[in-house]
Length: 134
Image (cartoon, rainbow, N blue to C red; front, side, top):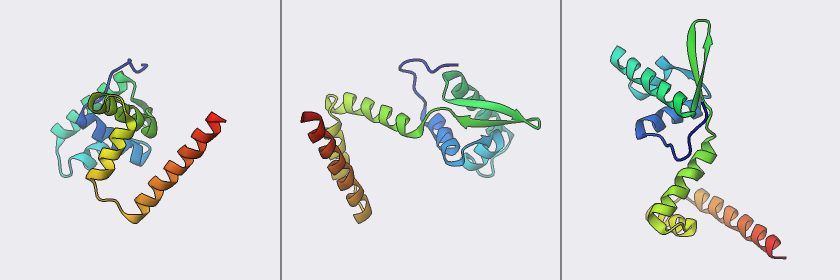
């Protein structure tokens, strides 16, 4: 089923998507074991219900293999993050992605590698912007 405009995921559903993004695909039991180590049947049932909800929303697909359901994320991780961040920018910063990014960078300690990566991204953006104005 296609994702509906504006439909999002809960924090628990997002945790399941992160497991699927990290693993590529997983069974209900594998997802439950990551999220609820040592959990029992109640946790497996909860995970099953939430995976079905994610499938209904269009974020997950399932396939039966050798009698076992295997789930995979259909949502691209980077596109999902970008959409979430744009929503935050709209809600908190009047739509300004720059304001959101600056506040985030100022509020968190960054490693030298992270600062280098941010600098690279900004240089690439500056070059792209300069190419658009010529």
